[in-house]
Amino acid sequence: MPVSMSYSRSDGKPVGGSPYFNMANSINDMIEAELGEAGKVGAEEGQRFIREEAGTGNTWSRPWSDGRTGSYPGRVDTGAMAAAMDHQIVKGKGVDLDIGWVRIWEEYFGAQEEGFTNGGSRTSKAVAGMGVMAHLRTYIAGAVDGAIDKVLVRVVDGL
Image (cartoon, rainbow, N blue to C red; front, top):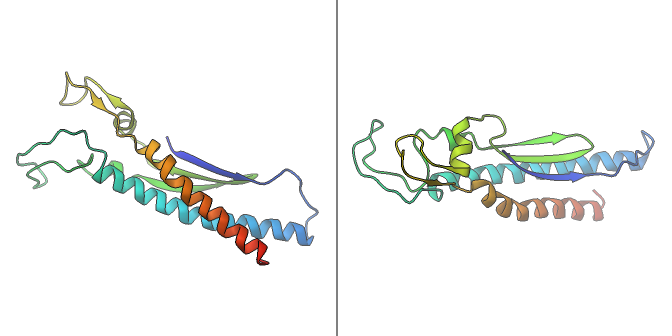
């Protein structure tokens, strides 16, 4: 259930070895590197959002098995859902950046993201979705635009 941002080059394939072909490869390499940095920032923001802002609004105070005595502000029990937030670059015709649970997926990640009723210890209570993917779509758009802008400046300046 990742957020996906894409950059794709045109289908026009220059003859291998030409300066234009080499420049296109250089540009794609730069875009891949910049999107990788943006992806890292996005994955870190997703982890932070889950830990600090995605709470259900329900708080509790009691001794817990891990030594806690109360609830965290976000959705953290074991930390596995936040830790699984990652990014990956997918290369094809262009370069795609995926952010979210791209390497590790547990069914409960989707339930927490979208919301649920009649589950777990809250059998008669609706739990609102945490909305981390919607948050990341907005958050990462600026980072992706910035990544592309950095590449464009380098191209204009002569790589």
